[in-house]
Length: 255
Image (cartoon, rainbow, N blue to C red; front, side):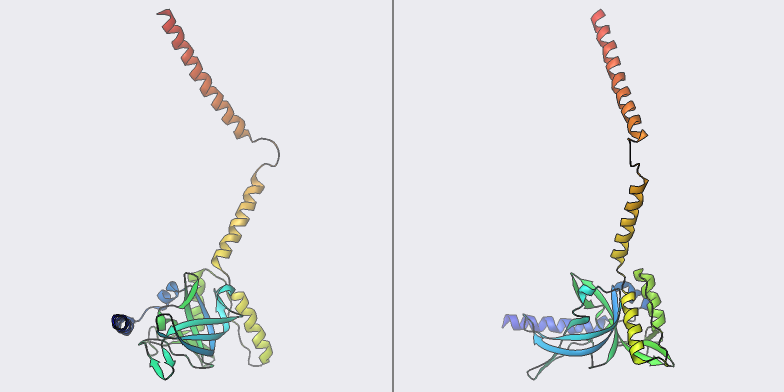
């Protein structure tokens, strides 16, 4: 009974937190708190109970385009996220503020990696619906769709924010209505691959290049002049010490 009571308090506290935690957050701040992003469509979902007996839902997404996410965080080019809540054996668990996903719905998700696991950054604030309006693609906030400041942002502007914050290079595929579907899919796939540049990989590349340049700068043959100069200073210092000690010894002998 105590365990059930504690779990009930925990869920109630969790729901209260989620109900009051959301506040409009500038796009720059949202990207700053995330580490990667994806455009996805929901393929399937699986509801289960975790070790604590809580109802959870695992979502499997088809990744349409990725931004700064490692292939190691995907399973056969699919993204899996686990969220609290769902319906299992006629019992429905609802967490206030949890994002909702519909089959085949296209979404843009801001993600964060914690302890080698990928999560939705800032819970529902990290989910956007993908909408095409007047020939442009927009990301519409799940939580604040009507907010004039954080309710909607064009894909082009979001990509710029991600490029600047994560220091990555990426390109957004431009879709020509006259081109075939297969060609468009090929372009999107290429852009998705090109969009992934891990900052740590860039750092490693720069480090290797810097090391190679440094090694090229070292003389390949002979001993550097600085080495002989150091030997000379070292010998001069000890010669001076021995000279002083010798003079002191002669002085004590005379006395």
